Image (cartoon, rainbow, N blue to C red; front, side, top):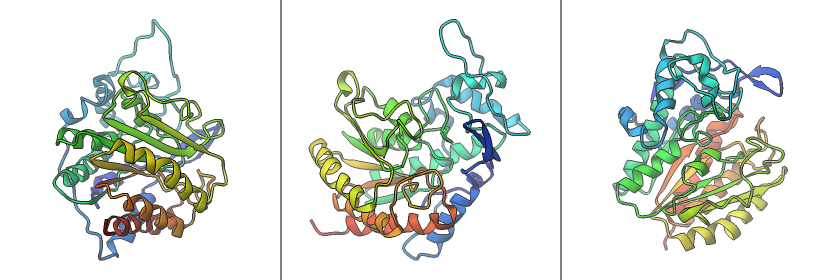
Length: 339
């Protein structure tokens, strides 16, 4: 497990949801629950990732977005963008935090003085996990908090600031992996990851998620979104109705995801490990149990790809640690099967 304690310093207090101010779901209790559960399990060790130079982020995220993040360290309180300009003729200045809405796409992802450090350590954990896979490990887990799969090249939102899974994929590619697959099992569509590899045939992006007509992020994640240019056909969105249980979920993985991965033949797999498919999750409407999550992990592991598991969603903090442990134990058991 890769994790840095500074990821716990970022503490968003609330978000705006459908005009209502609610307690922010992306709390430190999420990571604390996972750290506690995995630290008690002798099969897992806690490692601190090395610091990630800012230059490592510039090839993936826009310089203006990163510059905006650097300006946030002076903030004394949470800043919520309140104006979201779009269209020609609008000029945004990353030195002016009142312009932050230009780089944001929702009202639930605040900026404050601790965000930039936490986000960089979250990304550092994912990059280090990928580096370990490139050096021959079969499974590495990044406890990335804040999460990342909604972050695009030049936009933040969905509680995400840097796209940790995309950084892990790029790390593997730079280390020599000819092709990498990203499988997103979060309840919500990974719009940021899709956008970052939209034209890239070397990275297959697959997302199994709730129907965007009813669930965040609402505007992406439909089956007809298949990529463009040389990347056309290398993006797969599988939408499922609310109420999906473990049996149905494993059927989707076995019958629709596994054949696509086999045909693509990736050197490694990035698993965007959202746990908000759990039946008690306040932000999800699927019906998976803890045992289902273990079986999902075992099924994915049985495919035999060296795997970087990058933490994404999962907001029922009381059970999040045991759910993460179940998924990771399943992955390990599946990967250890003889082939």
